[in-house]
Length: 210
Image: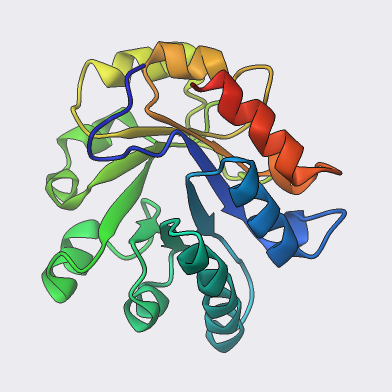
């Protein structure tokens, strides 16, 4: 799949401290960038906003150093405070149109696509890119509604011009097929975070997406 001009980030890391098994999570982030990760989303669940803000601020020091865009999951206030590149929200979070109205294009809005009907939802007009969630069932996405598979990627790519990010069970064995099916970016969690060598893991993934 050609790189989308509005989302030229083929390798997308979603990071949280709990998913980093072998190294400090900030070290994982930096090693992943050095290995070729193009964009990072921090996703922390069940922690206080103050703690989330602190973590996001520490991560932003690293992403700024390497000029890698940072996306905040869910917490719009943190994205505003840190002036991050983007915010990512799910279907039941703060709605994209409301975020856009309040923040006037301050950052790019990503939206999790869990149902085909969302493509007809008026909210879609406020969305910059779509996270197809999940492609396959995964422990990091326990409340799965739709499992898209490669066929789902292919179908959605014919129905929208927005950049498509494949997430959920993405790894070295299937990222190329997701890319070929129509995804513009591959989002990984454990494929990098749980690897003994996150830099090498990122290098291998990035090579497959060239």
